[in-house]
Image (cartoon, rainbow, N blue to C red; front, side, top):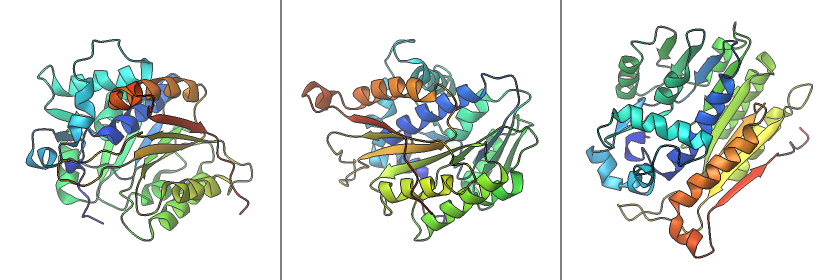
Amino acid sequence: MLSYRHAFHAGNDADVIKHITLCGLLDAMTRKDKPFLYLETHAGAGYYGLQSLRARETGESDRGVRLFKDLAPGALPHDAELWLERVRACNAGAGLRRYPGSPWLAKSFLRTQDRAVFAELHPVDHGKLTRLMRDSPRSTVVQQDGYELLRAFLPPVERRALVLIDPAYETRDELARLHRALVEGLQRFATGVFAVWYPLGARHGAEAIVAHVARAARSTPRPVKTLDLRWERAVPQERGDGTIGLRGAGMVILNPPFGLEASLREALTAAALRLEPEAAGAGRGPRIDVSWPVPESA
């Protein structure tokens, strides 16, 4: 499916939540000296111009990353600060003209002993991402179905892995494909960290997505620990083109690293209040829900 282009939505509120969560995950993975493999199934272009016609058409970054641009260093909790530091680094002190996508963020965390594989089907985004990774010899960019990465690269020789699954949720069979990929990934490497992003307002529904992930977590002989981090707006936002934006977003994480829940709860709460200050001031603040889904019996 090549119709979705993230350039229209780069730096929006859901991106802020997703990328703070990803930075928290990557930070946790690098606390140990042992190497790890990073896999990303739907990588995109790596970074996006916020002054482009696509970005300005929707103006979504105005209600996302731009709300953070004037904060002083150290104003946010640790995981959120890791993200904002990288937003600034991506712009090299030149205001806010670019927004780093998840591959850019991942690249900034990778050490010499770590390895990364990014999948992107769209030819334009694949080319841009390939150029971004030219100076990263331990990073590989492939133009193929991202779900196939789990079969091709798991179990990893590093014996540690973080897998980010971030589809557009546009196809009818997306949930079935997601479930199959997770089941196979867990069969191949049951101790890997798998992170599945989902929007509130997609065609499939957040609860259905979380349920499919939770059922996959139960496919192993020993059920996998599952953490669901969810952010929801108090008031829906209208995009620049008159349509209603996402109500929120979440990330379901299988085998979450120790301490991740507490650090991300603090960071996401601070970010959510920054994203929706008017509602918070009126006593209708945004919600950050943290839960440990219990998988249904297969």
